[in-house]
Image 1 (cartoon, rainbow, N blue to C red):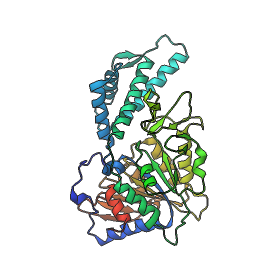
Image 2 (image 1 turned 120 degrees about the horizontal axis):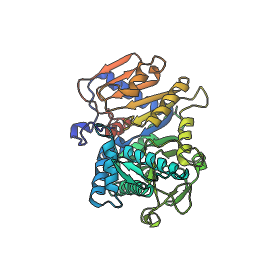
Image 3 (image 1 turned 60 degrees about the vertical axis):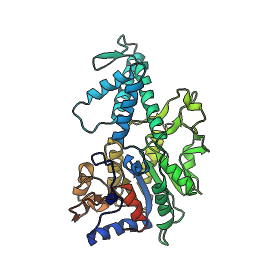
Image 4 (image 1 turned 90 degrees about the horizontal axis):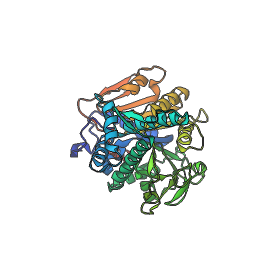
Length: 393
């Protein structure tokens, strides 16, 4: 996701930094793959950075500052106590803190349901009620919503990306009527806005207009060209009244200014058990999408701006890769200089390495092919990817 890289882009980082003809060939292979197969994308926070949205680390710092300067009901003390539980870690972010809060709230609710006399939860040696923990979680979510909504994103690169995916990359070999699937871990609405501005018909799981209601069947509409799946919820989702399913509420309407929960799910939140829950439904759509119906279908999943810190998503990707019978290809654009973590595991697995193409910051790795670069290539950044898809290598 680029968290360990500088967040400021210089002019040399705007374009791909390729001098090796072998790397140019691999870049062209990426475009060819996306031109002729079922296209699926997984976006993390790094894909929204060029539009002016914060990376997860930046978002974390902004939320911490807002709660420090104007928190209520002890939210600052609770959040600092939870943050202290991760002392020594260099990779924690606001989603980890929200996950911890969700777990503590669940413990408190379980005790309450069993009529335990211990009805408070300890955080950093202080005791808090369930209501105080819930209020803190809601305050964090509303600050995330506020920060993202006030960012005033520049959609130029995302509009170009959509134009390339739904225009330039459609060839005689591709299935023109085949939907493109966008799975995103981001809370912002950049994808939906770019698709709408470029007049690409799509479903985001809702019926209605700017204000809508959740309907999983909307993804199956025949005339749409794209589907957007917000795996971790969205800044414009909320629960109204006694809803069990989200509403998408237009900004400024006032309905979600009354304290209704913003529907943002932290990364480590457990799978929901009810199929009415959109989180479970979206994950099921991910599983179905990554498993081609017939052996003649080939799915190409391109991963952009994701740091592989979500164990649930990593599990789904790993499982899909191993169960695809070779019909799933994963393209990973990573800021790591070489494959690390689960990406490295895939690359080192002789049963999977042929299906994974790793475009690292300083090289390319695929099966028995390794091409290393002495300098940063930058194709993990979203802006160079857009230029590559537009025919500029």
